[in-house]
Length: 259
Ligand code: COA
Image (cartoon, rainbow, N blue to C red; front, side, top):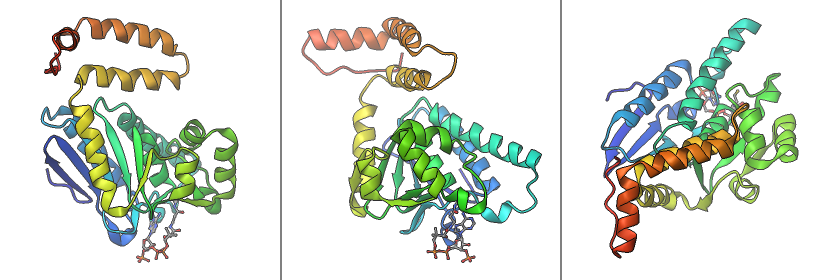
């Protein structure tokens, strides 16, 4: 697949999507956002892909935010359209039926922090830095940051970061639960790969149901417990459930097919 601003590679069941504008610290312009939508859709429909790593090119930045050079001339209405577009793409990433890990290799600011938070897990290298500095521009996050930061680190800490625009280092991000692991730069991709390979040995349908049920917890008007009951029943109707239960009783490793 040829992209202008992304690198896209599939190896051993893992798709690595790298935002590739290092001279702009991988800032998300509209073209890159659109390519992200396509890349995730491609990864979901490719049966060879079992999990996805999202990262940024170069040693300095995951994503340093939305591309500020595209902000000039945004009116109130255009701003709403701009935010709705990014929100929809990030929601699709959050609802990706295959596991998605953000490998945060540097600045994850503004839209970059929002993008990392839309992934199912975040692993940070020691050089990572997180923040929502939009308030410095007279703005607020527009790609879900006010909501997901509150979900991930709680209301008080999120409100402080949003109001001050402060940037926190990887240790503090780990301490407040914004990332699952904190590793050296060399360990970053291997750690993501190791987790995705373990998940790849599980039943893919069950993994996809976990994404849906966890999301239900955060979705207005949806009862997460009802969603879980329903998804549990659906899993019970799969061949993979029969295989998993039989393999346990026969003291062997299950072989899941996704059916
Ligand atoms: N949008 C557009 N361009 C950006 C960008 C963004 N969000 N973040 C960085 N860049 C560009 C810079 O303009 C610069 O481009 P240039 O070399 O053509 O001038 C290049 O990336 C390198 O950035 P620079 O600021 O020189 O690096 P630095 O190490 O001095 O500072 C940051 C790094 C991340 C602190 C700084 O770039 C920054 O504050 N970026 C904006 C962060 C932000 O507010 N994000 C939220 C946007 S809503």
